[in-house]
Length: 253
Image 1 (cartoon, one colour):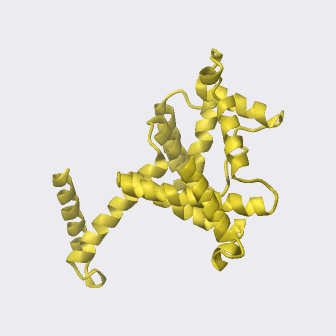
Image 2 (cartoon, helix red, strand yellow):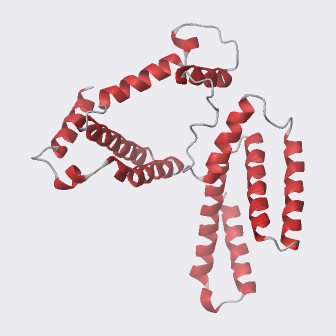
Image 3 (tube, rainbow, N blue to C red):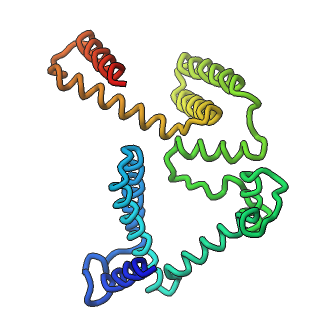
């Protein structure tokens, strides 16, 4: 596409001797934070259902991808064409039912993992191997359990997961009663992990759900701050304002 080629040429210019000093100084490692910021801005645009913002943020992300590829090209590692060719071949290979009209011998999700294993050419390939440890913990747990469930490592029904949650709560209470901080920490993690599985069974993205709840808390707490001197207020006053905020939200639905 002409517009994409123009973007690539623009990036080449920015990185050239006649380009921008700041752009020339950048290294691939600097983009860890940049990319996270852009992805979160994309998520925010999606949640706001703002297509104009989404268009802009997708462009920013694309710019960063082209930027990284240009740095790697200068180091003779790969260029943007290699990136595109790689993802094209990968997606072509993983959709044999579309491009080669093959009849799948397993559900699409299971077949996808089989094809990934085939691509790796590694008998020791793990379903969990390429889940980044740096991923937000709630999302990481969700992705891990989704993948494990695809091959049958899962509870039979959501009621079983609820039972597991109650079991974890009991273990957490026991750890607290025993005054064992390390065990408390472990049991809190087990409880959160179990709740992630409940969300998965109910087809709820836990990261998305918790983000929405955090936003709700922010709105309601801001209402309290706007209607009282919070540093000199008592718990009863703040509870009443919290409930007032909740009522106003319910009426607005």
